[in-house]
Length: 136
Image 1 (cartoon, rainbow, N blue to C red):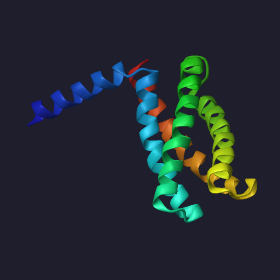
Image 2 (spheres, helix red, strand yellow):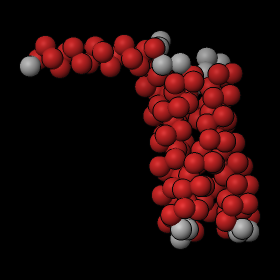
Image 3 (spheres, rainbow, N blue to C red):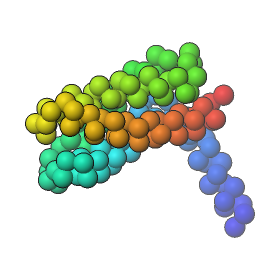
Image 4 (tube, rainbow, N blue to C red):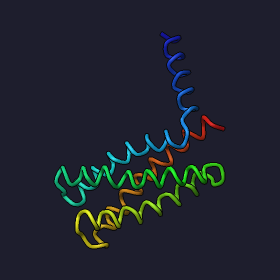
């Protein structure tokens, strides 16, 4: 049993080492979709379909932002600085998108745009920290 566990751990370690910016962005985007759907449902009391549209489109926009930022600055900035810059950009994207899709004022959209990026900032930090641990 111990050999099986060590074998699985070795395989997971190898897979994590091989994930580049694109793979990391895909993993991030899946988590982001789940977080965005939950926020839209809870904050705006949105229907399932509208929350789902928000949860798919806005994370894709932020997935491109994640990919661009990680690709350009992953070895230049420390994790906390990178996470902070990402979160600010995410805030801007989320506010504009929520205002557009839900037809709410910027101040109402800002509620979602504050809560959701904070949650996604933690998600970003977690993923980048794991990636960094295996790629240094």
